[in-house]
Amino acid sequence: MTDKTIQAAFDRASDTFAATGVDVAAALAQVDEVPISLHCWQGDDVRGFENPDAVLTGGIQVSGNYPGRARSPQELRADLDLAMSLIPGKLRLNLHASYLETAEKVERDAIEPKHFHTWVDWAKAKGIGLDFNPTLFSHPLAADNRTLSHPDAGIRRFWIDHCKASRKVSESFGRSLGTPSVMNIWIPDGSKDLPADRFTPRNRLRDALDDILSEPISKSFHKDAVEGKLFGIGAEAYTVGSNEFYLAYAAKRGTMLCLDAGHFHPTEVVSDKLSAVLSLIDEVLLHVSRPMRWDSDHVVLLDDETQAIASELVRGNVLGRVAIGLDFFDASINRIAAWVVGTRNMRKALLRAMLEPRARLVEAEARDDATLRMALFEEHKSSPWGAVWDYYCSSRNAPVGLSWFDAVKTYEHDVLAKR
Ligand code: RNT
Ligand code: ZN
Image (cartoon, rainbow, N blue to C red; front, side, top):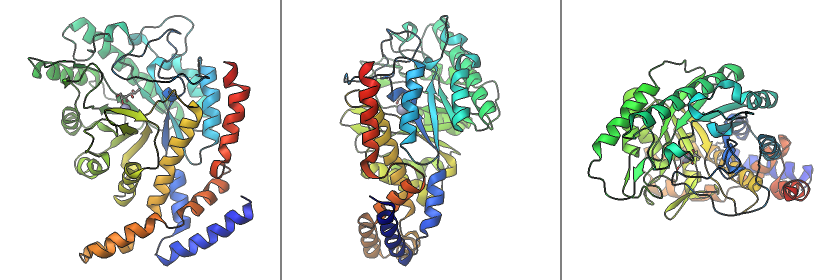
């Protein structure tokens, strides 16, 4: 597509949207500023850099053996540099504690900001913010799927101290980069078969979290989030950190609540939970992902639920209270393409939501005109939002259409295939 055809299609589309009362220029300015946090773990199949033979545990699994997995922080940053150059709009990077950089072995309860300084320098040079996660899986002390709720006080202490050390790292990100780091706690704790006591592990988890959060940290540098889950592999009967547990925890203790789109019963949707949760909780972290039957973590598509999540954020005017993170891992396709497709889709969904004829919809609903409301929704689906997206990409020097694919393929040939 030439600049001229992109511009002409955009001009026509702008007229169409203007006729429905939508300000396209305002939408473009707004969509560009919404931060989306890329998850570092898509680039190396959630292995991290603690040890080259790391085995992923905790009931999450990555399948596939597509060539080119990043094996070092340098390779991962190079891959991220390429992915980020192909995605328009404001980005962040979400790191796990297991992505530290050290010459000597550092135990998880002893991690410090200095072990992440190269990531901070890289983020500073790119002008992006960082987010963080303690890593409570893929470790001998998490081998039995119990961490913060473990009956052994010593093991619990180890994981509490890891989370405390992680908060310091997260705070250092916020201080160095001038934008608060959202730190998300997810634990794999649960049991395969029916437990006799569901109460005690949850009480232990509550007390462990209270201990972790006991030191106040300014929210201008660091924010705590907690992520629930319905079940995991090996935790089919009981998950200690369920959604209800963390919903109550976040409401009572004032943390953010993390909603992962793949962590609910198949007919439950995060898009409907946003307005429910945000009526009583200040801030939410999203793990935008794609559930597939019993599994989660597939690459984000521009599907109905991704669109519904984006539309809710825009309709409710809550973008300032919701941190958007991604969470998927696919090793069966080019890993950089997975980032590019998933992240572009999230931003596309946001743009499409911003082009919705909001005033007319609200007015139709106020008059109880469900017929017009449905007709407007349906018409919007085939509105020329794609022309606005193309123009947006081109105006931000990001590839238009599938032109990003060649860059990924060239890199695959020149770099990934040689790993
Ligand atoms: C696992 C959670 C969690 C992880 C990452 C790697 O079910 O979704 O967010 O995917 O921490
Ligand atoms: Zn998640």
